[in-house]
Image (cartoon, rainbow, N blue to C red; front, top):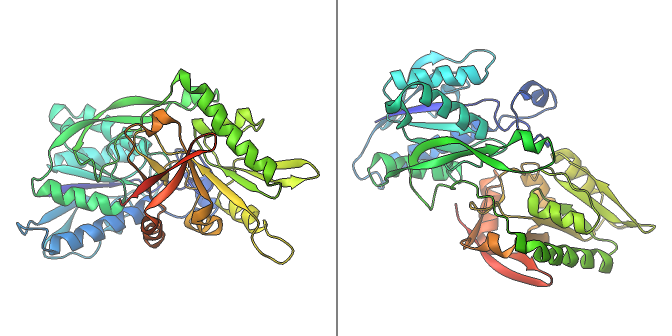
Amino acid sequence: MRIGLVVNPDAGLGGRLGFKGSDGRAAEARAAGAEDRAGPRMEQALEALSVLLEGSLNRNETEILLVGWDGRMGSSWVPPSTTRMKFESIGTTPKATSDEDTLALVKDLVNAKVEAIVYAGGDGTTRDIVKALEHLGDDAQEIPLVGVPGGVKMHSGCFATTPKAAAEVVLAFILGDLRCAITEVMDLDEDVYQQGVWKVRMYGEAWTPSSPRFMQGAKEQVERSSEVETIEGLAHHVQTLLEDQPDLMVVWGSGGTLRRMGEHVNVELTLLGIDVQGPEINGIRTLHSDLNEQQLIEVLSGHVDEEGASRPTLLLLSPMGGQGFLIGRGNLQLSPNVLRIVGFDNILGVATPSKLIGLSAVRIDTGDPQLDEKFHAKRFIKILQGFRTTRLIRIEEA
């Protein structure tokens, strides 16, 4: 089977720097020391796929031919060829890349008669690929997409939960074990975001293998007017913790639920950023707004007593509606290094009852497989769903 490859080499660069997306800011991100994200994530997926193809799960001994460009948009991330997975070059990645190159690559892949496209990037990359397929006709639009999560924002239903999950989906697809279904291509509505509102909108549709276990599904915008009191209760709970523990440092994750909670405790939080409310000093708590990975490490590392022991810290995270991700979607500033400083026991999920409807588990994708395993070994995480009301929810192994 011929599988097309698309890697957006600039996707995800700004995540740990606190950028809300990498579109148009790749040079800025690289100048600030950002490292490739999409490419290495594609490499992880293809390495896992190579192992699966050589294993017993490949019951038909199926072989695949990866088709793409040489360089950073393709071959740079392909592992050495095996008897069941090889690479065919149909072009070369330009020295500098843009969305126009993504469109050109997709056109080349369609002309090369690929039967599916595996890509690494974020929502912007998804939109570019879908746009290219739409321009190439009805047959092209029916080519299934499997996204390897490698961007900052990933609201669309084309994405697998992790690179390893993407490999599982591709194998099941080529063996004929998965049917394809239409999913929504979602992205942040930039117009209303400029007005301080976090809202995702639908930009199109795409075919993708249907796997509830390994595909994340599209983000749902979950809001209920009746939940005003619930939000107040959640905020009151956090306010009580702050009053009872003057030494407590609170790390506020991103998202609408936490932002509305902040309004009730008189804290103006960044819509898509990570904010830190420091310990009380002379009756005042300093708010550190929209911190990137390095700034978070500095603030958290400095939160120690005179003997160098860690002082109390609480990380508040709200799961993404419909997908259930606590970590790894829209909060890449919370890198593995940051999470190790915080510690698992100091993480508290926050969700309203409507968001918890249909959410039997949460997902965690730190970007570090070893750290992911430590989270999964815990099996459950605590979720705050009202004033002094918590429940345990299962951590799903992606």
